[in-house]
Image 1 (tube, rainbow, N blue to C red):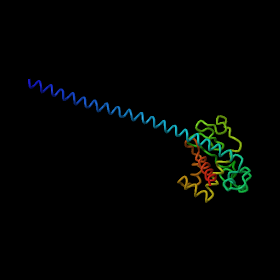
Image 2 (image 1 turned 180 degrees about the vertical axis):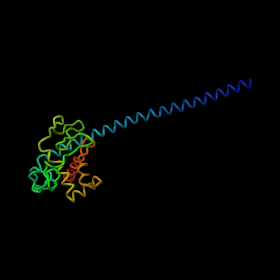
Image 3 (image 1 turned 30 degrees about the vertical axis):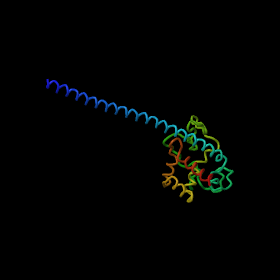
Image 4 (image 1 turned 90 degrees about the horizontal axis):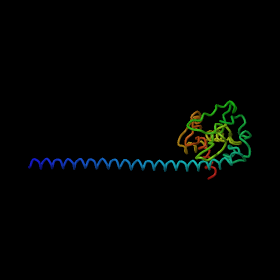
Length: 209
């Protein structure tokens, strides 16, 4: 009789132990399921924030280009009369219209190679961002009048002018040699080139000062 009682007790203890393990396993599964739900929600929040950023950036680009497309960006940066194209700017004779180097013309300048995403290959600005139309038509390679001589002249002027260059390096927290800068401004990230980031930064510097 004592033997049977001992066996039954041992069996009950084993069942209790097994039950405890099952409870722990179930809790573990519930915990990880909850984490996965949180992860999905977090991804949705990040995606929504990214979309809002793209929409706001698209609006800023359109506002900026409403001003830039009729002006010489180099004279605009220098805060002088800018009602002409870069090609007619008095500081440009003898310089390449794209990179502002001496010794070659724009037709002989090294072509831009965009990496990391899509943009207008003629001007380097996005054609759509965050579902918003900005300019041109990528399917047929169409740009927009007055956009082609903006990004590269502005970026190279800022990089080649000492006062602007110091502020540029401080803002983006890096320095470049010429080849590095050429590659960097053509890199696309989050739908826009770094060259467009330089334009927006310079636009903000001028407009808010």
